[in-house]
Amino acid sequence: GGRRGGAREEMGDGGEMVPDLVQQFVVYFYRHIRERNLQEIYTMYDNSWNKLSDRYFKSAPWPKVESIQHLAEDDHVFCLLYKQLYYRHAHAKGQPSLDQRADSWMTYKGLFDIVLNTDLNMLLPNAWLWDMVDEFVYQFQQYCQYRARLQGKGPEEIAALQRLDGEGVWGALEVLNYLQALVDKSMVRARLQEQGEGFLLETETYTAQTAASNVLPVLGFMAMVGLLKMHTLMGDFRGALKAASLLDFSGAASFLSKISGCHISAHYHAGFCHLMMKQHRPAIRVFNAGLVFVARVKQYLSRSAGYDQVLQRMEQMYSLLAISVSLAPSGLSLLEETVQTNLQDKHRDKIARMRNQSDVPTFEALFTYGCPKFVSPCPPDYDEPGRNYHQDSYKVQLKLFLKSVKSDPKVPALRQYLRLYTSISLKKLASIMDMAVGELETLLLGLKNKGSAKSYSADAEEEGSGVG
Image (cartoon, rainbow, N blue to C red; front, side):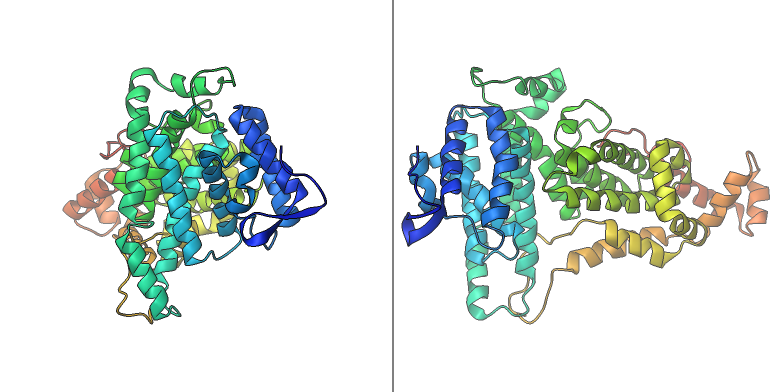
């Protein structure tokens, strides 16, 4: 038990005042984690932490780990878990300092090194394990954006950034290596190929009495989604889909669907990758599955802390879906009725403008709203300190996307005619469109490749045969 007393009590390094309820929280949180009481850990993680944050730490940070570690018997792993939550709170509250960003990186390194190199007997809730991976990639993304804004940074800060770059702090390669190590060590890919998702679903039945730990297998699975997101943010869409090739995007009872945030993130990023690779039918299928899922869990999630983000991701998926159905109209038939109705309500006019006039400003507006915050894995040019580089990657991706959309202004008209006629000779269609037969053949082949992909698995790399 911890020291009890008045409403607030002074303790720990730096003489921080730690509210009594917060001391109790730490004592019980540590006890439940030690006793592997999954239900209680989840309640404290998902509920108590947020309530205490709202009550005591709306504008202030949580107590430093030095102020509370004696309440948890100075337990090393618990202190790392606490620090991971401490820095997540600091990131959620606004701009963490450079020191905080660097220390958060060291915390993740410490935590993942223990998972990878020791035999953990811990049980942690799936939601927390997903948040760990998601936050790891999010903080990498935030660090890249922060580092690329050189305007207003003095020589001392730039020197500190260069030193941290040299140490690999939030380096793209380092982040990718940790995620890949979790995938490899958990053997999640081999196990999924051999036995399906049974071993993951089995972790849901683990209790305090079960000898096994769920941490490594579940983190390995989450890391595949983390890799999907990482590669997407850096513009490597083929690599992203390869990392996600064993995820089940269509199963209503898949392990992916057990953790809402993980499901939504996987479908959003995979759908976006298909869109960027001009695989519009797979993109439509993935967005459809993602949006059907959001509609199903929305009510339940409305009480959770990340609800606003869920709504934003949903709107982003509808924006990207509008682009996909404009470029592959036959894909409309792949949508569930509710998704189709919502899409029409939200974007009917825009879809008409994109489909009929290849309206570039509409494509650009929907892409800009729907795309992820791209990052450059490389440090900026520190010799030009007056400049901001954080938009550069986005501009490159926007340019590539618009180039693919603008590739042929005759395409929308051709689509209209193909919808009009069930069968028509090439010669007649060429004369209606006032173009040579050879030119029309090329255009039709391009359209055929654009509209369909061979399979709806996430690694559909080759385009297939049906006209979209």
